[in-house]
Image 1: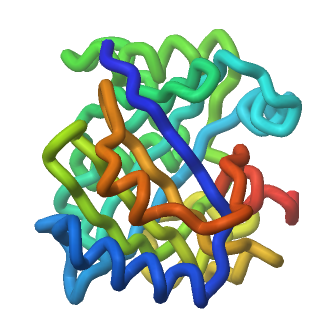
Image 2: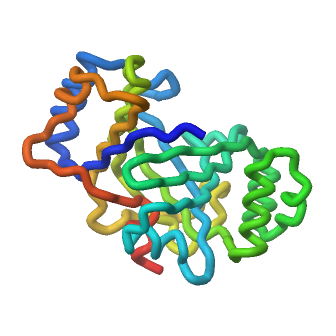
Length: 223
Protein backbone atom coordinates (compact mmCIF):
# COMPACT_ATOMS: atom_id res chain seq x y z
CA UNK A 1 0.00 0.00 0.00
CA UNK A 2 1.56 3.29 -1.13
CA UNK A 3 0.65 6.49 0.70
CA UNK A 4 0.84 9.86 -1.04
CA UNK A 5 1.22 13.34 0.39
CA UNK A 6 -1.85 15.54 0.09
CA UNK A 7 -2.47 19.28 0.40
CA UNK A 8 -5.89 20.90 0.21
CA UNK A 9 -6.60 24.63 -0.04
CA UNK A 10 -9.83 26.59 -0.36
CA UNK A 11 -9.37 29.09 -3.20
CA UNK A 12 -11.34 31.79 -4.99
CA UNK A 13 -12.38 32.08 -8.64
CA UNK A 14 -9.57 34.56 -9.29
CA UNK A 15 -7.13 32.10 -7.71
CA UNK A 16 -8.37 29.37 -10.05
CA UNK A 17 -7.86 31.56 -13.11
CA UNK A 18 -4.32 32.48 -11.99
CA UNK A 19 -3.41 28.89 -11.15
CA UNK A 20 -4.73 27.66 -14.48
CA UNK A 21 -2.31 29.94 -16.32
CA UNK A 22 0.65 28.87 -14.18
CA UNK A 23 -0.12 25.17 -14.35
CA UNK A 24 -0.63 25.19 -18.11
CA UNK A 25 2.90 26.58 -18.41
CA UNK A 26 4.61 23.84 -16.37
CA UNK A 27 2.32 20.78 -16.32
CA UNK A 28 -0.03 19.02 -18.71
CA UNK A 29 -3.76 18.43 -18.52
CA UNK A 30 -4.90 14.95 -17.55
CA UNK A 31 -5.39 12.87 -20.70
CA UNK A 32 -8.95 11.90 -19.71
CA UNK A 33 -10.36 15.42 -19.67
CA UNK A 34 -12.88 16.86 -22.10
CA UNK A 35 -12.04 20.51 -22.82
CA UNK A 36 -9.71 20.47 -19.84
CA UNK A 37 -12.18 19.18 -17.23
CA UNK A 38 -14.34 16.22 -16.36
CA UNK A 39 -17.46 15.74 -14.29
CA UNK A 40 -17.36 13.37 -11.34
CA UNK A 41 -20.31 11.70 -9.66
CA UNK A 42 -19.70 9.81 -6.43
CA UNK A 43 -21.96 7.93 -4.05
CA UNK A 44 -20.55 7.88 -0.51
CA UNK A 45 -21.21 5.26 2.14
CA UNK A 46 -21.66 5.77 5.88
CA UNK A 47 -23.36 4.01 8.76
CA UNK A 48 -26.27 4.97 11.01
CA UNK A 49 -23.87 6.69 13.41
CA UNK A 50 -22.30 8.70 10.55
CA UNK A 51 -18.89 7.25 11.36
CA UNK A 52 -17.12 8.59 8.25
CA UNK A 53 -18.68 12.04 8.69
CA UNK A 54 -17.93 12.28 12.41
CA UNK A 55 -14.32 11.13 12.02
CA UNK A 56 -13.76 13.81 9.39
CA UNK A 57 -15.36 16.58 11.44
CA UNK A 58 -13.54 15.49 14.61
CA UNK A 59 -10.18 15.37 12.82
CA UNK A 60 -9.46 11.69 13.46
CA UNK A 61 -5.99 11.03 12.07
CA UNK A 62 -6.61 7.50 10.78
CA UNK A 63 -9.85 7.18 8.87
CA UNK A 64 -11.38 5.71 5.72
CA UNK A 65 -14.40 6.10 3.48
CA UNK A 66 -15.97 4.08 0.69
CA UNK A 67 -17.56 5.46 -2.46
CA UNK A 68 -18.80 4.48 -5.91
CA UNK A 69 -17.67 6.76 -8.74
CA UNK A 70 -17.93 7.37 -12.48
CA UNK A 71 -16.87 10.15 -14.82
CA UNK A 72 -18.58 12.34 -17.42
CA UNK A 73 -21.86 10.47 -17.12
CA UNK A 74 -20.28 7.27 -18.48
CA UNK A 75 -21.66 4.36 -16.45
CA UNK A 76 -19.79 1.79 -18.56
CA UNK A 77 -16.89 2.13 -16.10
CA UNK A 78 -17.71 2.43 -12.40
CA UNK A 79 -15.23 2.15 -9.56
CA UNK A 80 -15.64 1.19 -5.94
CA UNK A 81 -12.97 3.16 -4.06
CA UNK A 82 -11.72 3.15 -0.49
CA UNK A 83 -9.86 6.30 0.55
CA UNK A 84 -7.63 5.89 3.62
CA UNK A 85 -5.97 8.79 5.44
CA UNK A 86 -3.20 8.84 8.03
CA UNK A 87 -2.36 12.39 8.99
CA UNK A 88 -1.35 14.22 5.82
CA UNK A 89 -0.89 11.02 3.84
CA UNK A 90 -3.52 9.25 1.77
CA UNK A 91 -3.96 6.15 -0.32
CA UNK A 92 -6.73 4.76 -2.51
CA UNK A 93 -7.80 1.19 -3.31
CA UNK A 94 -10.08 0.61 -6.29
CA UNK A 95 -12.18 -2.12 -7.91
CA UNK A 96 -14.22 -2.08 -11.12
CA UNK A 97 -17.99 -2.66 -11.10
CA UNK A 98 -20.54 -3.01 -13.87
CA UNK A 99 -23.54 -0.71 -13.89
CA UNK A 100 -25.71 -3.68 -12.94
CA UNK A 101 -23.51 -4.50 -9.94
CA UNK A 102 -23.45 -0.88 -8.78
CA UNK A 103 -27.24 -0.62 -9.12
CA UNK A 104 -27.65 -3.83 -7.12
CA UNK A 105 -25.67 -2.30 -4.23
CA UNK A 106 -27.76 0.89 -4.40
CA UNK A 107 -30.94 -1.22 -4.36
CA UNK A 108 -29.80 -3.12 -1.24
CA UNK A 109 -28.85 -6.34 -3.02
CA UNK A 110 -25.28 -6.75 -1.79
CA UNK A 111 -25.07 -10.32 -0.43
CA UNK A 112 -23.26 -11.36 -3.62
CA UNK A 113 -20.30 -9.20 -2.55
CA UNK A 114 -19.33 -11.86 0.00
CA UNK A 115 -18.18 -14.15 -2.82
CA UNK A 116 -16.75 -11.52 -5.15
CA UNK A 117 -13.27 -12.20 -6.46
CA UNK A 118 -11.91 -8.75 -5.65
CA UNK A 119 -10.75 -8.29 -2.05
CA UNK A 120 -12.06 -4.71 -1.88
CA UNK A 121 -15.59 -5.85 -2.77
CA UNK A 122 -15.36 -8.46 -0.02
CA UNK A 123 -14.18 -5.79 2.41
CA UNK A 124 -17.17 -3.62 1.54
CA UNK A 125 -19.47 -6.59 2.21
CA UNK A 126 -17.79 -7.24 5.57
CA UNK A 127 -18.19 -3.62 6.65
CA UNK A 128 -21.77 -3.44 5.42
CA UNK A 129 -22.47 -6.42 7.68
CA UNK A 130 -20.36 -5.45 10.71
CA UNK A 131 -20.48 -1.64 10.61
CA UNK A 132 -23.79 -1.08 8.84
CA UNK A 133 -22.29 0.83 5.89
CA UNK A 134 -24.96 1.90 3.42
CA UNK A 135 -25.13 4.32 0.45
CA UNK A 136 -25.60 7.79 1.95
CA UNK A 137 -25.45 10.68 -0.51
CA UNK A 138 -24.43 11.70 -4.02
CA UNK A 139 -21.65 14.23 -4.54
CA UNK A 140 -21.23 15.86 -7.98
CA UNK A 141 -18.51 18.28 -9.04
CA UNK A 142 -16.31 19.49 -11.89
CA UNK A 143 -12.57 18.75 -11.78
CA UNK A 144 -9.78 20.53 -13.65
CA UNK A 145 -6.72 18.23 -13.34
CA UNK A 146 -3.02 18.65 -14.16
CA UNK A 147 -0.18 16.13 -13.92
CA UNK A 148 3.59 16.43 -13.64
CA UNK A 149 5.72 13.27 -14.03
CA UNK A 150 8.54 14.04 -11.57
CA UNK A 151 7.25 13.12 -8.12
CA UNK A 152 4.09 11.68 -9.71
CA UNK A 153 2.36 14.99 -8.99
CA UNK A 154 -1.34 15.57 -9.54
CA UNK A 155 -2.90 19.01 -9.08
CA UNK A 156 -6.66 19.40 -9.27
CA UNK A 157 -9.16 22.22 -8.85
CA UNK A 158 -12.67 21.06 -7.93
CA UNK A 159 -15.71 23.33 -8.16
CA UNK A 160 -19.47 23.42 -8.75
CA UNK A 161 -19.89 20.98 -5.87
CA UNK A 162 -23.44 19.67 -5.68
CA UNK A 163 -25.27 17.33 -3.33
CA UNK A 164 -27.94 14.75 -4.06
CA UNK A 165 -29.44 15.36 -0.60
CA UNK A 166 -30.87 11.99 0.44
CA UNK A 167 -30.95 10.58 -3.09
CA UNK A 168 -28.71 7.53 -3.61
CA UNK A 169 -29.82 6.53 -7.12
CA UNK A 170 -26.56 7.79 -8.57
CA UNK A 171 -26.92 5.97 -11.90
CA UNK A 172 -30.08 7.93 -12.65
CA UNK A 173 -29.11 11.04 -14.68
CA UNK A 174 -32.40 12.63 -13.66
CA UNK A 175 -31.52 12.51 -9.95
CA UNK A 176 -31.79 16.09 -8.75
CA UNK A 177 -28.73 17.69 -7.17
CA UNK A 178 -28.41 21.15 -5.64
CA UNK A 179 -25.37 23.34 -4.92
CA UNK A 180 -23.66 22.56 -1.63
CA UNK A 181 -24.07 25.82 0.27
CA UNK A 182 -20.95 27.98 0.44
CA UNK A 183 -18.82 25.23 -1.07
CA UNK A 184 -15.52 26.81 -2.16
CA UNK A 185 -13.24 25.87 -5.01
CA UNK A 186 -10.83 23.23 -3.74
CA UNK A 187 -7.21 23.02 -4.81
CA UNK A 188 -5.63 19.62 -4.16
CA UNK A 189 -1.97 18.76 -4.62
CA UNK A 190 -0.85 15.13 -4.37
CA UNK A 191 2.62 13.67 -4.77
CA UNK A 192 4.76 10.68 -3.87
CA UNK A 193 8.23 11.08 -2.33
CA UNK A 194 8.85 14.72 -3.20
CA UNK A 195 7.13 17.81 -4.58
CA UNK A 196 9.23 19.49 -7.30
CA UNK A 197 9.99 23.16 -6.69
CA UNK A 198 8.47 24.14 -10.05
CA UNK A 199 5.07 22.83 -8.90
CA UNK A 200 5.49 24.09 -5.34
CA UNK A 201 6.09 27.58 -6.73
CA UNK A 202 3.21 27.34 -9.24
CA UNK A 203 0.60 26.58 -6.57
CA UNK A 204 1.70 29.24 -4.06
CA UNK A 205 -1.15 31.58 -3.14
CA UNK A 206 0.20 33.98 -0.57
CA UNK A 207 -1.55 33.57 2.76
CA UNK A 208 -3.55 30.45 1.84
CA UNK A 209 -3.02 27.63 4.34
CA UNK A 210 -3.51 23.92 3.80
CA UNK A 211 -6.61 22.74 5.63
CA UNK A 212 -8.82 19.71 5.79
CA UNK A 213 -11.88 19.90 3.54
CA UNK A 214 -14.33 17.16 2.68
CA UNK A 215 -16.74 17.40 -0.24
CA UNK A 216 -18.69 14.57 1.42
CA UNK A 217 -19.01 16.50 4.68
CA UNK A 218 -20.07 19.65 2.81
CA UNK A 219 -22.76 17.70 0.99
CA UNK A 220 -24.06 16.18 4.24
CA UNK A 221 -25.01 19.56 5.71
CA UNK A 222 -28.60 18.93 4.57
CA UNK A 223 -28.86 15.63 6.43
